Amino acid sequence: MSTREEIKVAATKLFAEYGFLGMTMKEIANEVGIKPPSVYAFFSGKEDLFLAIYHDLLDGHLMEVKSQVSREQSAKQQLYNILKSTIEFQYREDLKSKFLIRLMIFPPDFLKDDIRNRFNEMEKGEYDVLYQIIQHGIDKDEIGKHDPVQLATTFQGLMDGLFWEMQRYSLDVIYKRMDLMFNQFWNGIVRS
Image (cartoon, helix red, strand yellow):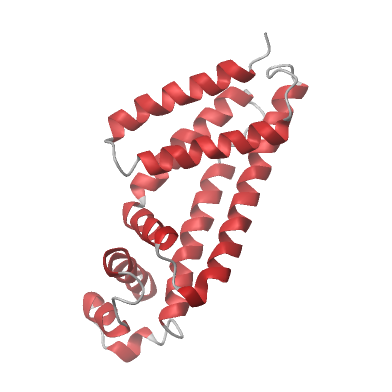
């Protein structure tokens, strides 16, 4: 792992545990085992480092969603794969997920606009993917004649709900709950 990545991993851990104001660049350097000025060779400051981690997480999430798009698969399979793969991504990136939760609950005041704008961009990209899959499913008569805007928005809400539930339940329970929620969603939109 490169020094830049080691810094981001250490910072993610400290941000997740202590919040933005509760830790320093010196503590990050100590966690990595380098001198504090070395951190500034990679990041201009704590804000820059914080945003780099946040952007990596959002970009990774969106890439995970986009990676599940496949015209060879049914809309049902693509949507299910999106749910499953994003849950796996959040577990794989557990530390970053904790960082994101802390960020959502306690965003630093001076970064609120940047954080909100970047999150909205990611959600828009996610929405676009979901809309395309759903619209394709409608066009192929796999999904009933519903409003794809409403279905894509509802599916995003389902994804958000599962993300928050991941903070309380084991992976086995989450998969059971995911299957239950997805089947309820799908049964409500399938073409009869």
